[in-house]
Picture 1 (cartoon, one colour):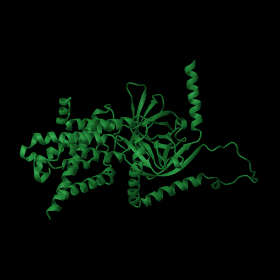
Picture 2 (spheres, one colour):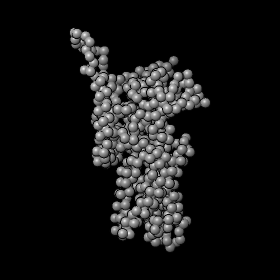
Picture 3 (cartoon, helix red, strand yellow):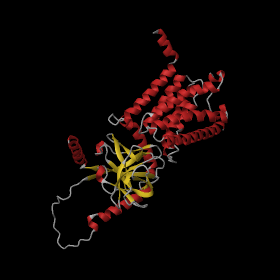
Picture 4 (cartoon, helix red, strand yellow):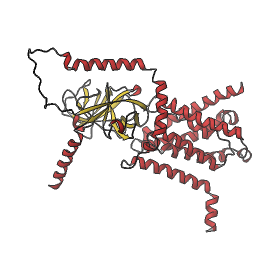
Length: 171
Length: 280
């Protein structure tokens, strides 16, 4: 249990650091803004208490917001994603799995299962985030394009990262 | 009452979610409201320090290009200095010059944090109120305009980049002197849009666009960009012009904050004129 908590603490710090120090400095295009830090919320075990998920979402959102010049969007988006996660899990898995300490990943959910899980939740997060950042509906379709491409890149990076660390863990 | 407590207890996750979202929106609206205290004031001490540390580690990588650009600028300034002009007269008289009064003060600063791919981009620089930076001062770099100081803390400032949906920079076409306004549509960080240029103005692709002192934030004729595309706006009687920005936002490092010492008196004159107009 303690080992698990430490593991998640380390993951929290590493993901936030990776996001701020590296991902935020890759300026591919104005349409591609991946936010991989939400992999932290995605990877929480199924049986994590809902309020713990919400508090952790708030914490990681606040951390990200304190490094951005427009505070608020990250908190709102991550909390929304953390809340929706519960319903997706209820909808997609059986009762036994929901109460087991299974960590959602490519190896536990299978490639397709995890891909859909990540796509849905990352899309919810990015939808909230990008619209709050733009703070208007005036360029609706350009914001929608941003959300679409960024979601694809975020999911791609999260899955790549998992494959990488999964291989290392196996060795 | 008991039922209410039970109801809240049963759906406590939902109420927690609502409370957190409410909190996020309050924070967001507070910051978007310009009059309120800035969020940066609360977080700048830690996050700016972290950005500073990251910057000092990565700063070495582009030291050479930076030096080159500074050297070029030095050369240009030396050419303009008095010593580089040949004295044509024989006698030299010294006069106490009251014709010239200093209008602009430049404060050199380093970019600590920068983004170019968001819809609203901001730049953090390492000079603040302590160094004499004030809100709405212009920020320029050797190649062109960068943005306007948006928030000031004692040791850091947040600059609203030209690459921001809320930014609107007064500009003019260098050749003709006609005034327009630079905005950014958010699709590409290399190009910006120049609007409000009337159709009778003879613009051409390749014309230089420079800043104008009318906005009181920038000095006259700081380069902004070059016209690459001209479209006629069918609804209004003006052009939609696309310009290629000269400022290399992606590798911005050394910038100058421009403090216009006459800004207050310019604003005072303008507001006075507006007030008198309102009275009539």
